[in-house]
Image 1 (cartoon, rainbow, N blue to C red):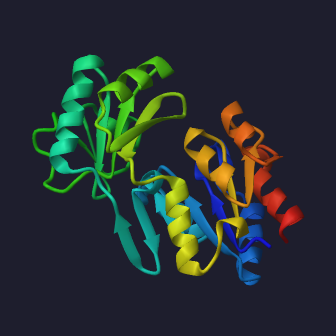
Image 2: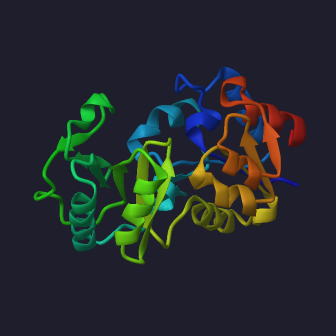
Length: 252
């Protein structure tokens, strides 16, 4: 029996226009009525999920691929050390000349370019990284155009962090001690639920682990081939409300 549902947002629960349908909200509310926990598991920062929390407020959430967890009014963070962050940025600048780099710290995006062009209305600061706050980074983001560049960056990273491709256009660097799956495991344990009783929905590289390890791993039809291969089930596309349809048919 499924007791916890973990949902990726972009290209999974969200339509291409970045909206959650009324149908999906209705299905998630029905899950809550039946005592099923619903959580978001996303690479997004906290601020970029607030509008969706107002539409449907999950029981808990995993942000930044697991670097930040919100549960029971608590915030759990596992950041990259500030000096390590600066060293990583310097090393990437040496191998990817002119790369667009950004750092998420305390829900503010610090970037070496005008990030407001891409994330209008969000908390962004253009910087050369010499004035970063003293706290560690939740996530480092590097603009890439190929897996070759991902591999080149990976080769210069210290062992305590790792990089994953997202959207085929950025690499996300987080502490090796975090992932979406690890965040889900922590939340499931807090709620007294096993991974076998968890259904996970996703579409991208950072969803593969949870699609493999959760009791029901469900990829949307628009997912990358690697995510589909990792999943036990395939549902409709994000624009077809694939996750909600699967939940209504197989859980409710």
